[in-house]
Amino acid sequence: MIEIENLNQSFGNRHILRDVNLQINNEETLVILGASGSGKSTLLKLIIGLIKPTSGKIFINGKDITLMNEDALNEQRIHMGMVFQYSALFDSMSVKENIAFGIRQHRQCSENEIDTIVKEKLHLIGLDDIQDLMPANLSGGMKKRVSLARAIALDPDIILYDEPTAGLDPIRATDISCLIKRTQEVMHTTSIVVTHDLKSAFYLADRIAFLYEGQFLFIGTTDELTRSKDNRIQQFIQGKGSFNQSLSMGGESG
Image 1 (cartoon, helix red, strand yellow):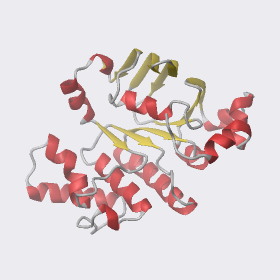
Image 2 (image 1 turned 135 degrees about the vertical axis):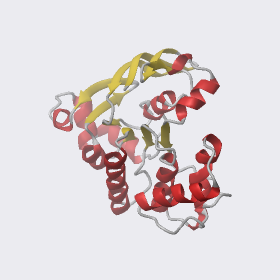
Image 3 (image 1 turned 90 degrees about the vertical axis):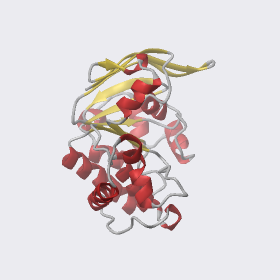
């Protein structure tokens, strides 16, 4: 279980997150919705311990990661995987070496064992026999899949997804959403998906948390979200006003 209590994050005079409180249950898929700049990606970085909060606590299975030193955080991250918005594959490494990177860092495995794990993860994401290819030879959708294979290489309990369908055409975006759902069902992970893709969000979510200017306006089911009478939420759902302009600019800066 992940519990976030009174979390605040500022960079200089800019307040990114304001008094955020959230509980994420084991094996739940929570989707965090919001326009670009609302603080979604910053929240992911805080959960995985890449940055320290200005104030507040983040408990993962009862342990406050905000108090951990880097060694303890690295130990915690073994149980977490992250799929970055732009895949973040190592260009100079083959698909196999990208997927095996965390295994080599954190486990003592023979080369045969590494080969077996890599092939298992590639099979799970539907890309058999590409382990010798380089990232430059992969399409955008394939890079997203390999990024997921790398994230699950150590069989994590928690997977974080930062805009997993960004930059993909509708067909490829649907494929990635289906893959995320299948991965959660097979591995029984706790999944946190940051997105502004409504179709993907509604397909994946057990619950949705709507982040607006660093605060949660709503946490609940998709049905409850669509019935919300909050004008800011309805503008986002209908793609109107400032939300529509923000989305059309593309990208996620926080």
